[in-house]
Length: 292
Length: 274
Image 1 (spheres, rainbow over the protein chains, first blue to last red):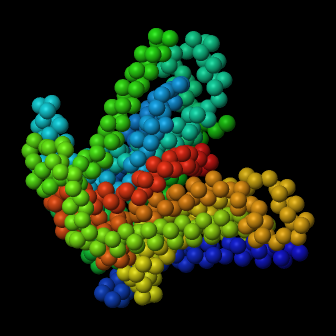
Image 2 (image 1 turned 135 degrees about the vertical axis):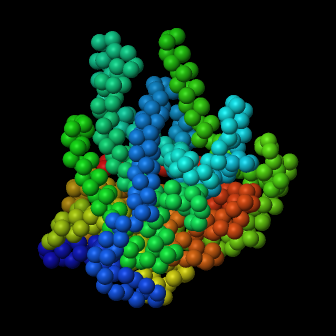
Image 3 (image 1 turned 120 degrees about the vertical axis):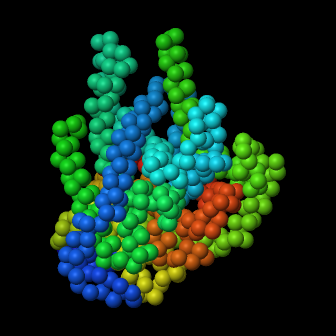
């Protein structure tokens, strides 16, 4: 009887488990092993020990790339969270008319491919003919080269990334806020608490589980930024050095420059960075996340 | 009352301003797609095209095998969704509701896949597809994506929330586990299936790096990669780029417009249950 049960169990998990083993678990270890090799033309590989990792420490492009990536994370994650929280609180206003329409409008970028989003923003950011510079001109502000100026381009990418992430984060936070029991607010109102007091003393503490969720997913996502940069900046421009992310640098080493072994070392570095940051957040959550 | 009205007004002003910023790029994308190149680069910008003709859209199909890219994306999306719905729900049910040795260890190992950034899988996956002789073929587009640790986790959560009595009754009737899964439990997790379908179709439709890498030829790749290839040659032909973008995003936008409730509630759910 029990054997029958076991058989069904193994049979029903088999497709997924086998597929994951072949296409994910094995590749993880393959990347790890490949990071200790140089892989040249025709995928001929040669063991090279820690050479790739030593190269990581002296590769100026890599350090610049790390700086770029941390810059993206530091700007996009907090700003996205703050703006999304603001939007979610506004959207949660009692008896708000048109709430459904607002939700759809803000969520639209989530279903739109980053490639298309980057294409239209690149066009709007165009230094000579773009809409943004025209609108700024109407207010007497001088237009900039948003995508072709090395100093400004990273921030243009940050703007596009935040724009694209607001809707998703807003929806998650809205669900979290709507899960807060109304009795808290009623009690606060009896005590005469105003809007701001209610937000900081009830909403904020009790929405921390959702905030934690979007913080972790936001961090993990921001470290892996690729599509937007690939479309807005391209592969062979002057601005690349100041804008490319770790994943973009991995992509170029793996598929353009033929440094597959080195690319694997870059990937392992990314893995370690994300693991450390995620672990720090997991440990830190006890200090500020309120689970009931 | 007055206080509530002025507060509502302020809320609407802020939300409307934000809505304008959200919609502007989409509106500009569509408007530019219908313009001629001269209209597009006119300074100061011309807002509305003088003629709403579909020539630019036809141009996209002439300049690139866009129709093939459309076909590939649709096939990839459908195959991926169907495969994931079936395999992940089956495995999710087994992990959640059938007891067998090693169940928890195997499940944790599958979950650990979620901890790893996708960058670490892509090169070996590429090399595997290359060895299988499947580079630049349609199966290459969806093969690795048929298997999802997240989908399995999600479905397991849904199955575990169902009452056990249903299974017990079915077992008494002599049903085997697959029959219980297929005939009784699966119909009860429709919201989970819908959520998984939405997440999967979005990924299959919008992902860039994998199709770009594994199927470099535009006629064998997805719309996202085709759009990237379009930019390679026509980066300064703005109406063409915008027309291509509009067509690439249209199916998913329409799907979203029709199934708004399911999209938004499904995604909201994934945040609360995590």
